Length: 246
Image 1 (tube, rainbow, N blue to C red):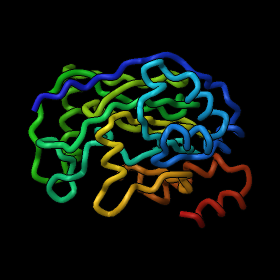
Image 2 (cartoon, rainbow, N blue to C red):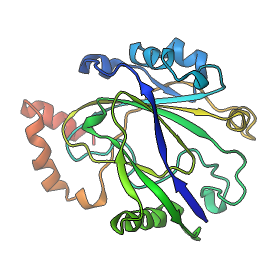
Image 3 (cartoon, rainbow, N blue to C red):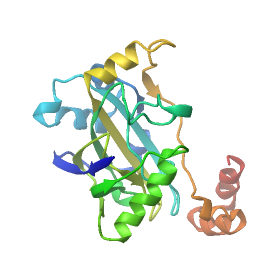
């Protein structure tokens, strides 16, 4: 199958928030527009109030996350992938042959320079593998970038970035420590109906209560990793408390 992976910038929003404000911004899961505005903090409200005009009145699902990152950490599971492709394929894999719905997304980052989302831009011809799709496709995308057939482009902070469910992108490793805010709106009537009328009941919506970070397998020499992150903690007590939480 041929995939045209792309994104476009749709304007800017306020991104000069302090670390304390970013840290305390509520996180959202599967929220509709009204719930996102009601439950969100100042960053979310500003983002929602200044949307591109064609995103102001459509049905949307809103997800957001706040991450405390250290150098070398990922805000998400590493690797190129697509967002919101129905997981109705074999063994719960994304369904590219007969998806129940298609989706369009609008994302934003605050303090994104700490850890920018990276898109792979260009056309690529791919075969759907029998196993884990994105495990193979990540390798294929990286090979296409290395061959000059695709290009890596980072999403800037404070910019509305529009993409769809065929836009390859990945989280990158944090280049320094800091708090990072991410939001994604997904717009498509089919997805709204899917969330409301699932066989196991309507999808839960509301505040999100979990913060996660990830390490690439190549970074999992744990003793060396512990030495590397020690310098980011002011006291030995803070460092030991972090290790106890792992």
